[in-house]
Amino acid sequence: MLSQSEENYLKAIYSLSYTEDKISTNLLAEKMNTKASSVTDMVKKLSEKSYITYLKYKGFELTEKGSKLAAQIVRKHRLWEVFLVDKLKFGWEEVHDIAEQLEHIQSKQLTDKLDDFLGNPKFDPHGDPIPDKNGVYPSLKVSFPLNAIELNTIYTITGVEDGSMDFFQFLKRYEIGLGSEIKVLEKFPFDDSLRIQIDQSEMNISAIVSKKIFVQKVIE
Amino acid sequence: MLSQSEENYLKAIYSLSYTEDKISTNLLAEKMNTKASSVTDMVKKLSEKSYITYLKYKGFELTEKGSKLAAQIVRKHRLWEVFLVDKLKFGWEEVHDIAEQLEHIQSKQLTDKLDDFLGNPKFDPHGDPIPDKNGVYPSLKVSFPLNAIELNTIYTITGVEDGSMDFFQFLKRYEIGLGSEIKVLEKFPFDDSLRIQIDQSEMNISAIVSKKIFVQKVIE
DNA sequence: AATAATTTTTAGACTTGTCTAAAATAATTT
DNA sequence: AAATTATTTTAGACAAGTCTAAAAATTATT
Ligand SMILES: [Mn+2]
Ligand SMILES: [Mn+2]
Ligand SMILES: [Mn+2]
Ligand SMILES: [Mn+2]
Image 1 (cartoon, rainbow over the protein chains, first blue to last red):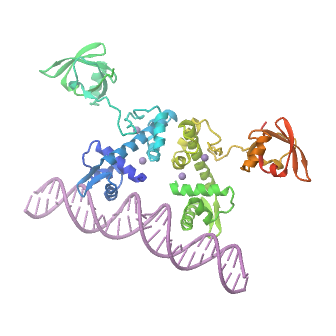
Image 2: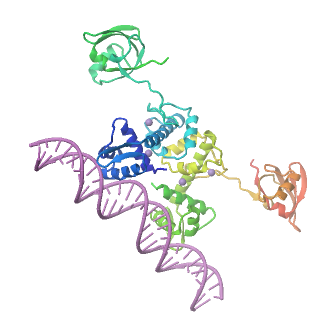
Image 3: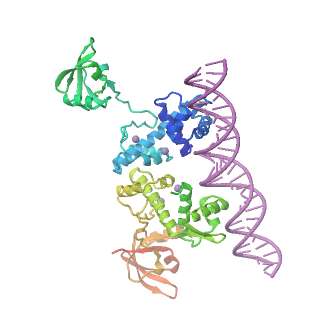
């Protein structure tokens, strides 16, 4: 059984693994708000216990064992967040620090019963996916930029990349917003512009715009 | 903010205060499954922080501040036990160790919201009273042995002290059980036996029996 | 009241987790 | 390729919490 401190480090490494391949001492130190020397100490210990592989000066990465355990901590964290928001009526912005404590409670039975009590939620109040008891994440509908989707298929807009006022003005003018249903009718290779159907109306959008609008396939 | 260890010691002192006035090092060491020297170390610290008063070789006792805090830890412990049993469907015998961890989660808001969510329970699954957010316990109906109660007043049987088969056989023969309504009609000083009314029937019981049957006054 | 037994405290050691400062290694610049 | 800079590790210190063994204080017994 790992200490609370070891678990927090492991979780941080897990979270960095999402973007980084091998993780450096300084990167983890920054994430954990500690000093590099403390990280080295902990990394030695976690490596000793084979939750990570580590070569001096060369960085470290999670082992299968480490990854499995980290997923379980994330699972607990997110399940407790669901509990706090859904059952205790906390705001979603208030729950992180409490979940940071609750995630360390040791009882597999508790986690599983909590999961059932909450109705086996797939996402936490911040929209982050909750791994199941085997560490498996719910299948995510992945987002694509508009310029990369199938023709004549309905998608939903889930995000835009550019946050400039000009871009928002453009989107508003044509009533393009989150949740709008969108279908690409035709591609024009000469300038990569697209003829699209947005809700009921049709229009042509430039390649520049098409790269900034992200969509997900509509399920069913 | 106290450490988990400090909180556990404080809670143990609080629990011993119920029977002991001044608490000795060895008594607490036994309760905490530690060595006397560890207790001395911790007692110094808690005294330093004025949760207890302590004189070398003379024992220690809770201050007002210590008592208040300990009651809040007990409150959390018992509320979480209610949660585990009522909501997560644990058996009442399974919840103590988990509550032992949960009682250390730091968030007053969490405790109060949990209390509301559970419907402000007054007793935990083991029948122990839950202090409110001000540390006040629900008014307990206190139990007395039958030989110490008022004449001609209705009481309810809440417990028996002797667990022998012979005694149970006796109780069963006369249909005396938990929840039975009982009234003492007459006392016979020559042998301290009692004439009682048990539910609808009347009988005489010996002093020996009268000391083993515990009752509470019927409210209202 | 002296001696013996018990209880409590102290002294010193060990572990975990952290830090600062210095040394070692790696990466970048010239 | 050497020098400079950045990163990482080591060495040594400290606080918290625990333990064993020895010393001190208290309590009980003769
Ligand atoms: Mn945490
Ligand atoms: Mn979250
Ligand atoms: Mn506890
Ligand atoms: Mn209980």
